[in-house]
Length: 229
Image (tube, rainbow, N blue to C red; front, side):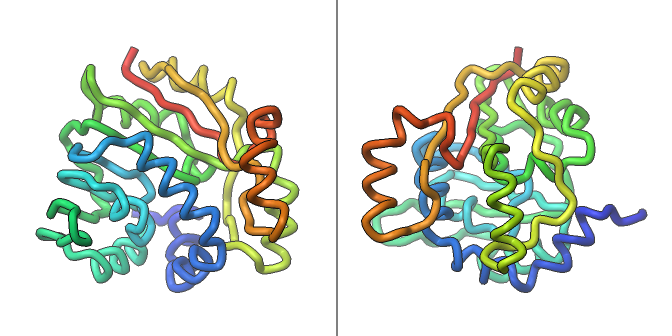
């Protein structure tokens, strides 16, 4: 099977993936906490575009299944987090984690993807596939970089402050909403989080605590929750 441009890109950046995650740890820690608030403990969870597995591992799921088109990413995830029973830190339950390049044929309580939607070659087709992973009680959680931040992200990439983005297309919320509805999925919550996604002494804490609410539309993380129509 012919490899896609996106697959080739993420295979190429796999070795540096965790380096860039650590370099931007303030953003990724806030992303983890957001997902932890949106996805309850003890659920059966499926992540699309799991990378090296850190987000899925952070969640206290009963069973977690990570999918990625990059075989190199999956290889790294398997090394970091065993596929059988994985012991969490004290006080956390032991649960199962799986990582694969194979799309499963089962349903999940929660399906989520973070910073992935802009890399989908055919978002509507993917939404249709996702609907097959859901039942009437399932929820889909999607987080992405707010498209208005695209110019800043491209400058940061050129300065090597973030991971190379590779082939991508940032789609606005309204267009995504239509595509999802056509695939049989409806959005029930749409919001923004993290006005300042990097740690700047004297600025970040103040801005995120006091300015985020009135300026929420400009926050870095845009996210939504959806269910089957």
